Structure formats: structure tokens, C-alpha cells
Length: 192
Figure (cartoon, rainbow, N blue to C red):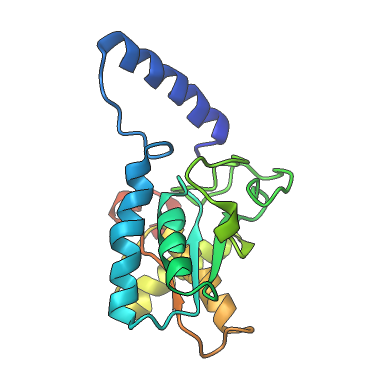
């Protein structure tokens, strides 16, 4: 499990190495290219393929780049599109909650960081939480029922979208991202 503290220690070590070697580092948490890729490409592609008919977007908080870029593109197209940022239950630091469960099982995000440099809080309509169990069960459901072999954060995205579809957004169009393949999680309890 990777915490915000782990990331900070890694960040300090990376800065030292970059300075010593006069190297370039592709830092997804800070480089604007992360935001721009989703603002200029992912978001517009989704808008084009959906005919712009999107009611909501929900995305698990990792570096914040995919949420930041897509939500900016969606809000520019239609400010009424609801954009939900997902965090693990017990580690919703971005939502301003105390971190009670930093060792959640959802890999790929939920780092218990209260600030993500690329994130524009104005584009967050609500912060939603997901449990480990919801993320894992939904990732397995995606594989079993839809043939989508995805990871923990994709399971988290789908779990929250399904929850929203059972509530006020019933019958609406909700966009989620499938962030990664399930292959790198074969050695974890996600696929036991």
C-alpha cells in the first residue's frame, strides 16, 4: 500500500536524483501535460463519441490529472455536467475528512493527500467515497459480466457510477474511465 507519506519520501529522493544527474522527470502530479492530455484529448473524444450527451462524470483520485482535464473539458462544454471525485472510504483527504484508513486496498490513488496540484476544486461538484469491498467486487463483476479486465481504481469508478445510477441519476449517462488493465494485479487479492 502506498500512502501520501510514501509518495513524499519518493518525491524527495527523485528531486535529489534529478538534481544530481541534471535529468528530466515526468512527474504526473505536477506536470501540466497530465492535465492537458485529458483536457485536449480524452475529454473532447468522450464528448464527440457521446454526442455531448453526458450527465455526469466520476473518477477516482490518483494524480488528479484525468479528473482535472476531463472535468474542465466537460464543464466548458456544459457546466451542468456533474463531476464527482472519488476517494477511498476512510481516506477522503481531498474532501477535507480526517484520514482514518490510509491502508485501503484500492491501488492507483487515494493517497490521503489533502491537495493535488492539478485539481481545480471548482470543477468538483461532490466528493464521493467507495469502500475496498465495492471496488474489488465491481472490478470482478466487470470481468465476469462485461469482459473488462480492469484494476482496483476502475472497479471504484464503476462502483460509484452504479450507485449513482440507482439514485438521482437513474437513466442518465455517466462517464467513467477504465484506468488500467487487471494484468498487473494478478498477484494481488483482487483476482484470488
